[in-house]
Amino acid sequence: MNINQDSVLAALRTVKYPGYSRDIVSFGLVKDIQVDGTDVGVMIELTAPNPQLGEQIADAVRLGLRNAFPNLTNAHVQLRIPQAAPGAPQPAAGAAAGGATRQRDPRIRRVVAVASGKGGVGKSTCSVNLACALHALGARVGLMDADIYGPSIPLMMGMHDRPSVTEDENKLIPPLAHGVKLISMGFLIDPDQAVIWRGPMIQKTIQQFVGQVEWGDLDYLLVDLPPGTGDAQLSLCQTVALDGGVVVTTPQEASLGVVRKGMTMFEKVNVPLLGIVENMSYFTAPDGSRVEIFGHGGGRTEATRKGIPFLGEIPIYTEIREGGDRGIPVVVGAPDSAPAKAFMAVAEAIRKQLG
Image 1 (cartoon, helix red, strand yellow):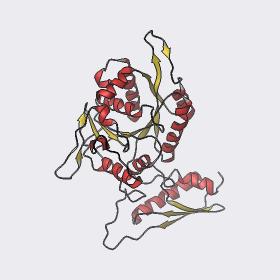
Image 2 (tube, rainbow, N blue to C red):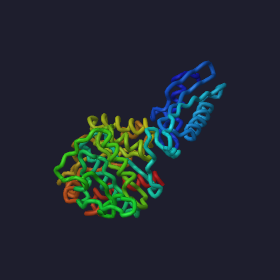
Image 3 (tube, rainbow, N blue to C red):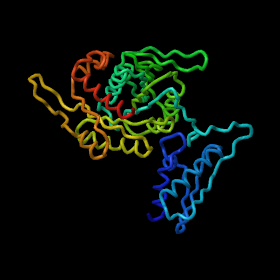
Image 4 (tube, rainbow, N blue to C red):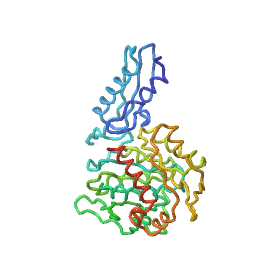
């Protein structure tokens, strides 16, 4: 392989930030690349005063470059590390590139983000039913509503109690509904109150939902992301090491075109794509005929194109909407129904992937 700035940058994208699934390039740590024949120089700039972390990254950079370029002669890594203020404690090795510490509780085995890129495709409906389906499969499950501006999890799960607080660590105790632990901005504000915040407040709230909630022992923490690829999504990826992302789409190209941007976001921050769910896949009319209101098969086609699993299709059923409005997801309210079985199949596919 030829050694040039582009190929060196590509090699550095394989170097993960310690404790994260993201690479050092996407974290913005690579400030300069110099190539002189088979000699390579890389400048790494940290934002936290942590020499031990810097050396760990430098060693990983050297190893990554040698693996990428067998003809490499020398790999020079220059570190820029800010000075700590007098008397300030040294950050832990798991400190994030932006200065925030890694907040994933070791008692949480798997963290999975449910995303869409586009609003109105039933992502939150899928999130609550998948959470309840995983619980029905015997797992301990938490559900975090990361849609700060438009929280809908309290309504769909039929829970409106405010979280209590632990006496010792002053952490929020998540309310329990249908066997699933929940946290949402909807529990913390009045129903008609609008959240009018800029990015830093969104980031702080996401960090608190991860690190300041007493989740306890969980097999899965599902995170219902808002539409788009903005502050909430980026904050989550920077705060916790995600085990994977599930993308929800409807069959038509208008949805898939935006969903592709959501998948690209996961790829850029090195979050594995667990697969695609096609929601509102078709409708069965009273006479038994099948009506493909939004087309059909777009989710499966996109999964094939991306080389990722197609997790399943969820048809349009009145029972799904009614369950969301009543706060009793269809997986709970009608577990033997066709829509509940469709969600159970998707949950089983996710569970098999994650082990």
